[in-house]
Length: 356
Image (tube, rainbow, N blue to C red; front, side):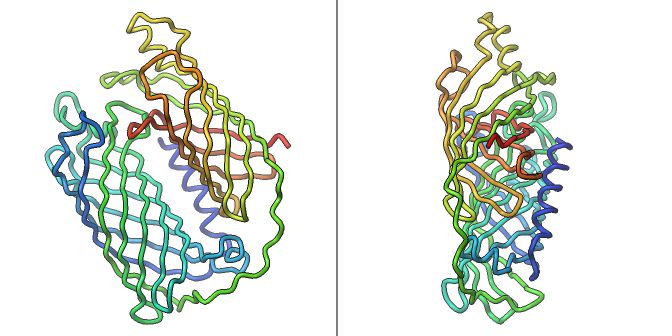
């Protein structure tokens, strides 16, 4: 977990300092409602997490960035506090996350943004088979925090804007430890944004450079470790290999297609416990998705299906979400979260190499 946190901070520090000139901060309160995504998580029905959020951000307002996405990209750091709605069971949480938000001018005073956040959260009431056996949503004090929202900004003066956001929050440990049903709580944020200088959204898009039409081919190796069941503390290795193709649509958006091979020692342990063939630890899947690029940082999400999976421990459909940092033209490193429906399978570290 510490390695993932250091990687994420390294990637964001490089992106945050690149080509940005205008900064500001915001303060907001949020009201949400948790929902049970599985029958096993039905105990959280009725929980209404409430919280406060403080953001510091910058606008990527150079002409180069504006040309790339036909918008003004915004990125920043967010600190949040949540009362998770069931203090004796779910407890309280503190989240630190990084976000990126493409913004679009809808009128002279109204700005629309699409906000994606990723980071880490500390929860004080994790699952414990002796002291808190009822909390099946998270079993690690430190877990992953993800959020996706639609932000609406209305400027009441040149430097100050009111913000009403519709946001979907997710907390889980990325499959590092079980149980891990996760906590999902959509809701609204209402707050105030202040810019240190007057932002200028009246930009013009100049002619864009020609997009390379060729498909970039990558080979990726990855590693993770997770427990075999809810009551185990020992972690077992997951190794994998991916072959992928990436095609740019414009200066920011790209599509992906991936073939993945897995060797899962955690599955092997479960197979041994169930007196089944250990050869079934191997899996193969194909996936496709979409991503976006901000300088040396790439985000991608994809939906996949297993074409070889002789066990029935997991759903056949899966999805995964990757952030990577491009060191040079050939090499990149990244982290990736893989999940089946609402349940995270694992979070891995990966190394990517460009073949062409």
